[in-house]
Length: 253
Length: 378
Image (cartoon, rainbow over all chains, first blue to last red; front, side, top):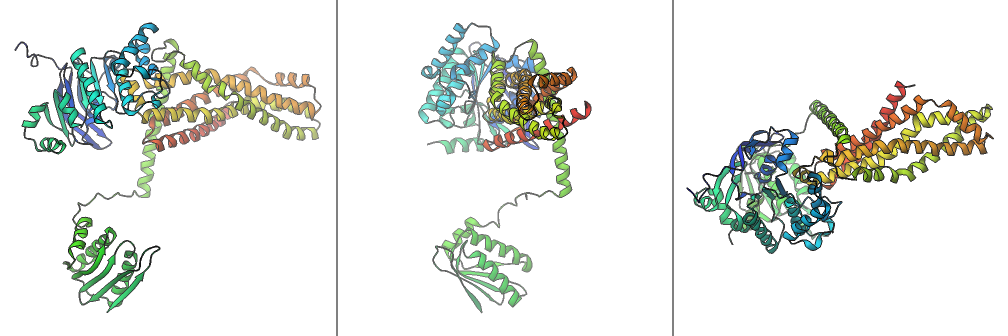
């Protein structure tokens, strides 16, 4: 169908039979997912179900034990280091606690990917940094050190850094964890804007129900290392899977 | 038949606890809390010894006034012990409050936990051996990666920040100058003083120049400098990388398509390779200064003689070996520091452990390699 488009879209990320292990403990047991462009996909589930592990394994921050992951149709797990870096340059990641380089200012943190991967002049880089910080509402913290920022500000600075290279895919590891509801909501609004204005593909790990309701296009529900559901939020609620029902039931207020 | 017991723990009111044994019934009365249970265990042992019952089939709980998790654990122990003997064991008569606590704290119906098995001696030995082997392989892999990226980093600065090598050079090198100077001067001074007195006895005071030059250039210069650098920079490298690992900064670097070794370690290796020979040269010169002081003041050698003898005795080979091994020691310090940094597990405590391990191992490795060098190039 023209207009719908979803069926004809090629997935940006295709994961097949992903197995992740810590030592002998299997954390993810055969996950297969497609992630489509321009959508916000939320990986959710209770604590310890393997959400962050899934994110880190598909990005090879940990090497998966088995399986296949393709980005834009290219297999990345068997890729050489340099080739994979070319893939990573088209992505950005917002880390749970920001993971800003602590010894340098917010400005320099955002500057790093730009000065390392491009030959842009300092003036252009300056402007990019300023606009990205403004985008996340941190324009006035530009020359502060990460240790002088609050938790929410660190996350926003981390988001600005993730956006520095204008990524096509953005990964967020628990963006709203440890934030008050208002800050959390403003971060969600920001993420929604990225999707609408920049047509970014966004993958988010979270267990905040309010956040999921605000932003999710698709959800991937993990439980005990297995994927119980992959599809729309409404679909998940109608699917009649007890763990998912329980998850939404308990979280309602 | 019963035994009354008064247990008076500090700052606690008097607690009363009784244990009865009649026929096949064990009766409990009073308060069964963490303050009385130690005595209760003793008393139960005594009761069983004195009365030697063939079996116990029932425990009467009606007299229990209060109980806590320790008391319930005690009951569970009793249950397990006698339950196995008599095949059946009844608990009876607990008041509702006590029963509620028993239900909450009882471990009888918990799933059997997988016991945290202690390894036997040989198993532990084998496990340690395998772990050491894996660590060695990892360290060698890391070393080869560091050398590879450092070598390729000479030709292209891809993946390194501009100015980072110079910045590291200042950090690793010029900031170490004062301490290197101070220690080298003192060691040169002491070495000359001790040997000068002996040489003077034989009227051979003029040879102090030879002795000091050889000792400092071949051994002490590189060794002192390396030990100081290991203490200063080995620890700094390990804790920096370990902290970056713990706070996900290394993951963040990778996500920015930056290789952690190239970005963090290579500038350090480049800087230390340049800086180390300079530090060693500096250390030797300052030590010679201390020695010259002794030679002039104590042994009446003229400064000209001291300098010319020192220069005569040294060969180019000595100097090459001196610089060669100081560079090798510097690499060892960087590699060991990085290794422990990348290996870190856990939070703040892990960082501390990594730092300590890095310093101890790198000083050990430096001295070990120094011995090897000495044997190779006598």
